[in-house]
Length: 104
Image 1 (cartoon, rainbow, N blue to C red):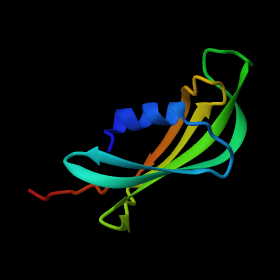
Image 2 (image 1 turned 135 degrees about the vertical axis):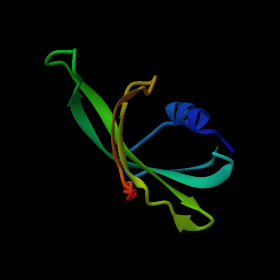
Image 3 (image 1 turned 180 degrees about the vertical axis):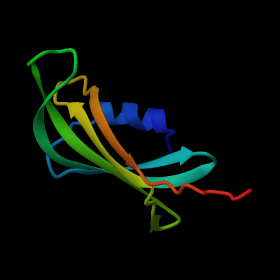
């Protein structure tokens, strides 16, 4: 069982290859989730502030289940370096939310 931060650090230590599916159990907000990370592909990415330098990265797409049902609150594309240190280079997060308007 991990918290969100220790799950991230554990991912940094695991050898990765395209097509891998890594499973973690994560505790967050007093709930226990079964979390998965799919290693989708490798990509060359550019980061702001680094000019034209490109970094080799794994595209990882995490998702989670709670009580056997998929948690569908958005999507994440995370790019981790292919180097031994496996640093998180970039994350693209899409979140779904509802805006409630109250009449006065």
